[in-house]
Length: 109
Image 1: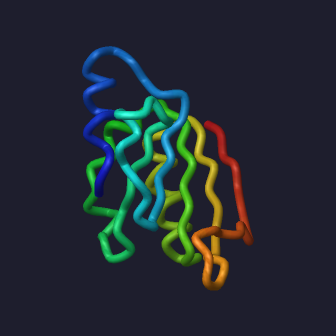
Image 2: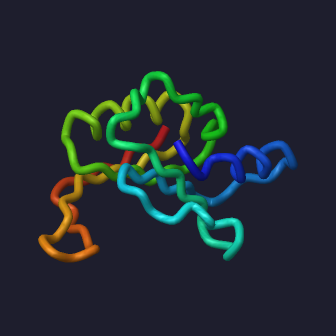
């Protein structure tokens, strides 16, 4: 997991982001440097059940992955911590750096 350290610093200072983006593809995680929304990247082979996601408590999260089973696992885990989980199943467009959403869900506590 990469990109979560800044969120932890924010939370320790009593602040929280409006939304956190969790991507399974490797996006840039230098969001702090540019004042962007926090992006956390998780490698496709990381065991989701071993991740410490306590920094997400009470937050809104957008989760995307390209595998249905991983998406279901992401949703279940994030629902334990987050107030809102927007999740989408995506496929990368052939030969491009863009993705198309093929399924999505928004859950709110």
